Length: 239
Image (cartoon, rainbow, N blue to C red; front, side):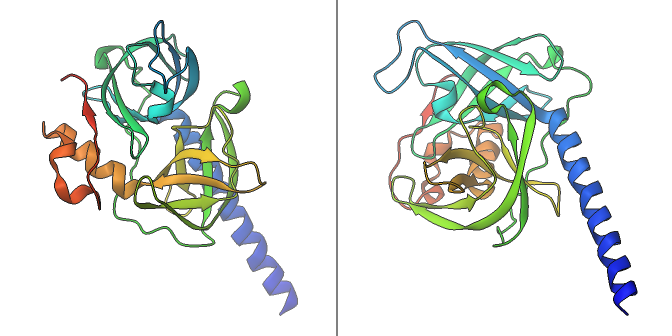
């Protein structure tokens, strides 16, 4: 029995390793690097920023990221798929409450290998679930960190529960996907970490899925009164 149990554990670990490799390989296909430069930033924005985003609609060139990555100011936005030249991006929607932004790029210039990110719009995060945070921390482009869902944290500003994870989320990771290893689907968008080790947070996918779907239906997401528990001020930049 001990030998059988050991074999079962080896098989389980091998399957998990193969699943993790698949998750990371797929993330390289839909994740982008975003560089932003702003000549005259609003007070809440900076002159230059860099972060992560992921492709949510290849047909229209729609990419999701954090608002604090894209900024809300008129900016020059460069988008980079792995191994490809930079593409020009345009901000089309920002939500300062949820700290998310939608960017578009010319869909005809998106590389053939790129795919739509798999969004888990209806999945409830489970404490203890293995996850991958993918992005470009500290200039280390297209890299992954692993961890688990540690718990949840209620954010008063957004009036929403954020996913807490010990997967490292450092500057450069913001706007990137938090991916379930079990399902290989995105369960959150990496948003911020705090100084204490292992305290990192992501907005659950259920929130940005609603915004993406409304936007794709040509409905201003802010008009959807049931989207949030209190009045918010999203901004439709241009269509």
